[in-house]
Length: 122
Image 1 (cartoon, rainbow, N blue to C red):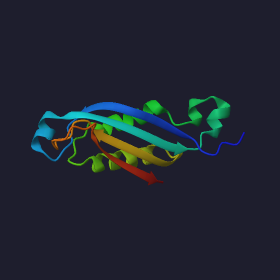
Image 2: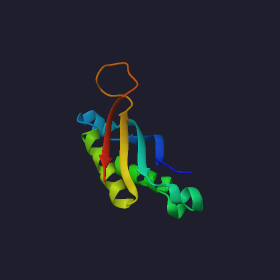
Image 3: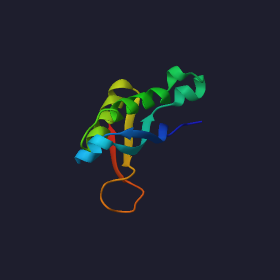
């Protein structure tokens, strides 16, 4: 078997955080969803069945949780910090996609949320 593409993905991680430009967002906080896709060669793990040959998704979650706990004005800034942290901590990561959704954005619209998504290469 030839593996042509592989990734570790975390879907809709839920956080209560204090990101936003408005003072109320920084004081009261709000709900956020974070999804992360990390492209990496996982072919060794397919054969070995060893966590040492993959990217541990629990360790990825810890990176996301650490960065979400640090308040920022812009979701773009948070996404950039998560991406930088992942690429620094996981050398086998080749690229990544991060989506952060503010579940109740203060814009007077009835919506499912407002998101920022970044894609980055090593």
